Length: 365
Image (cartoon, rainbow, N blue to C red):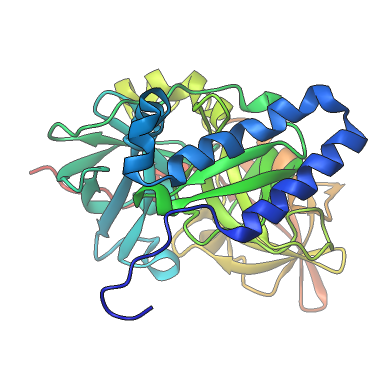
């Protein structure tokens, strides 16, 4: 675009073609009773995309859209220079977040872990300082506490378990109506991350949007259903080329929100953490990286090792590995692992830890 030009404030044509396709598919696959449910997010999108003058003609719809977007914020974090996550996540991080309580913003945790300073910018452009209030490694949620007031009404946490494949929802990144996209829930299945992370029922959406990090997934009622985590190439299923995004279900935040506010973490038993980043390669688990000074590093695990078992139990997928490790007890339990190191099979015992103790903390004095 040239200087002084502005982006169109109406829905993009490809959304219209997408809408027609969804209507036809819904009529054939689900019948007319489901069309109202499928079209609800599009109705909300049209209101969000209308110019302000047009919204004034429908005061109720305009106020609802403005109220929803007022909860979406920008999150900027400056990370501690000695942060253990700096090598992989960088020292300057930026994404979105959503107000879920007065003075509290939910976002994806990797944006704010090991932060030195945090700045949150509201829908009106006002920026205020904030601090990390809580982090939950099991889900990936981070919670930020505002240190000054910010305009915006918190969104209600909806029922993300009720989201079905083919449902249409909105992704709302910080930036107003132009940062809103319509996406389709294309899969509800498990996700295994290489960093000792497992979601049993992640929300996979299609097509991919560029402003996913920390962006809330919003349902047809304007409720908060998930937080943006990743961009993926196989949203429709393993081995199926389908660029999309992965969202952490908001259902995982609801039961721990009070704990995060009160204690900075969930009150549930802490899972054992080993400091192993592994990848699934041709039916095997290969160690891609070990966290410096973590349990695996201390025990002698090296990048390139092949993980073949937890004790006497064989493992070939990340999900199998994590479930067998976590089944052995809480953080602090000794975990026996079997590796193929070169041509030798080695049995190593790793003393697990609470991952939170491995992160660098900002000094308060």
